[in-house]
Image 1 (cartoon, rainbow, N blue to C red):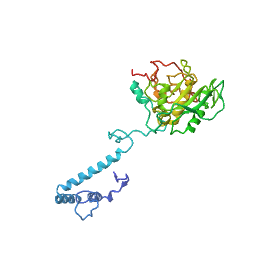
Image 2 (cartoon, helix red, strand yellow; image 1 turned 180 degrees about the vertical axis):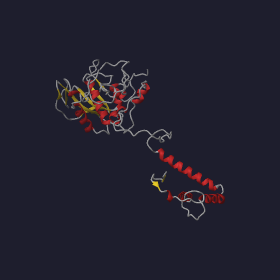
Image 3 (cartoon, rainbow, N blue to C red; image 1 turned 135 degrees about the vertical axis):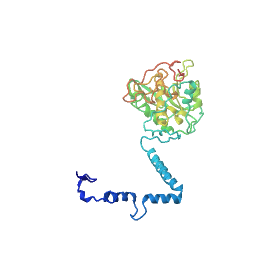
Image 4 (cartoon, rainbow, N blue to C red; image 1 turned 45 degrees about the vertical axis):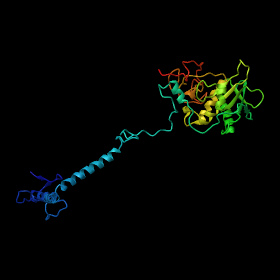
Length: 346
């Protein structure tokens, strides 16, 4: 029966010679090579070297290999911790995975579900920190010069753009331009239905779109809700006073609102469209539009949670946002049950 070498090839028996112990010469040489890696054949065997090393250095000879093993294990653990599928300490050092990086399409701020007490609403609607603003104007108004074309269809409703005297620190040209451009936009009131608007600075004026200091806002709008708000001050039949003033709070114009965190221009558009909606006869809306946007007539300054349904809406500054059904939204008279301000925890 033929012998076989390690590669599986038949090997002539004459090649294998036996030494005195009965082992084949090639086996004996192989054993000696394994026992003496890096050692010449005439040097002491590896086992002898180890025993001599142990006698010379005592317990230190055994501690050194243990330390090497511990170091290798620590290195392997550190490397594996950073690989996918392993938790790495977060900001709090809890050992949980770090939070993911925020994307660029985060929804605007919303009130937390279940937080609807009056104090929570007031806190959520508090004026954000920011630049200074004029607290008290003179209470008298000046018309900003300029006129515009009729936009929309139907009998034009004529409006002026005005600023309370004494307000400083606001670019009034920018304010005037934004009011006119918003009310001329197809997404605003004149872009749909039988509504037409025209900016004028003299003659018959149906309503005044006005930038007003906070203390004068309180005179015109009241302060039943102790936060900075805007409003529409209609004609008072009891006194015969003709006002019809859209009151845009200069504090909100400068600081914005938490519902529109990080987007002051969008909040200003909301201010203009919401309060001018009142001037055009619209009431408040209390339910999200199909798809989840807040109707522009929702009191978004007070929060984005519907008091009627409990659902969260997404901030929206336009009466007719493109591609959205059900606009401008169902409107109802305010009641204690549907008021965003009166929203309570269940």
